[in-house]
Amino acid sequence: MTYSRLTESLSVVLMALLALLVALPASAEWHRYSDTAMTTPVELEFWADESVTADVVAREVFDVFHHVDTQMSRYRADSELSALNQEAGKGPVNVSDGLFKVLQKAREVSELSEGAFDVTFGSVGYLYDFRAGKQPTDEQVATGLTRVNFRDVVLDVSGQTVAFRQPGMLVDLGGIAKGYAVDLGIEVLEAHGIRHARLSAGGDMRLLGDKRGRPWYVGIRDPRSGNDNAVVLPLADVAVSTSGDYERFFVDDAGERVHHILSPSTGRSVKGVQSVTIIGDDALTTDGLSTAVFVLGPEKGLKMVERLPAIEVVVIDDKRMMHVSEGLAPPEQ
Image 1 (spheres, rainbow, N blue to C red):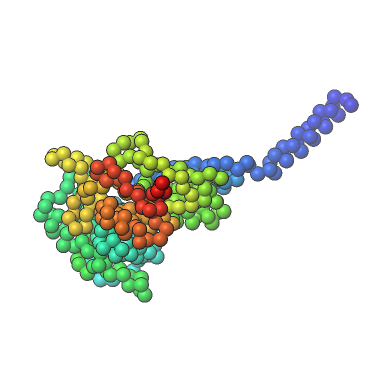
Image 2 (cartoon, helix red, strand yellow):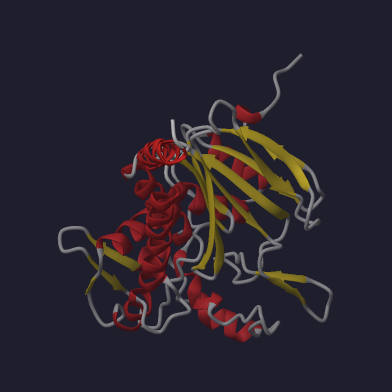
């Protein structure tokens, strides 16, 4: 074979190999992404076949969080929630499907916890500025508490409207909206055929399936250590939400920790608990329940959880003692 014939043959072979490589799909791998939405870091990892498709999927997931932010943020003057707070004291307001669903779940958790979870705590909560380290006076709290009552939020299912019985009442969905966004993000992943994923936004997380043959290991943070875990749990296909007194807080002049989880009955930061972690089927439920148990405290909180199917809890109290529901307790010897 002459040199020119050999060169021509090699070129044909190389072109065939190149065509074969182009035709083959990219090998499956883990894809990891991060974003910031709803004033919190959002982290996503999932198993997928092609990185280009993975980029599109991740963008769709993060778009969900930004959309929910436009609906339910207390920090945005243009959000649907801000408009509701301005108008619902005057009469019924039509709201979106998503906002109505979250308010319905909030009402359910409020009734279950006998008011320990109450989105109308915003009537007092809006008086705090945790970044500036400022809290309201006793007189301001007393005035705000007159407008804290979840029963004064009237939900009309037939018309999908919301009204407040008291003018000046303010709803804050910071204790439940991120869980809703996480659930919607998981729906996006499932629609794209993703079967193994972890999606988290601050203290709220959903695990889709397992980690390809082994569990996901989820650490519950030590409330008084920025890097250490108090316990690590092997989990799969569940939602996990943690509420802690370390998320947004400042220390006042008296040396007291003032944090964002407020008691609807006192308008002040809840004492006696450092963190609560709820494990369940969906993040909308676990998000609301983690706040409710935090306010109730270990004894009442565990009693409530034990009545609920498929819900588990880990409570770390202010004495650094860990309390767990029966489903997480080690077997007796």
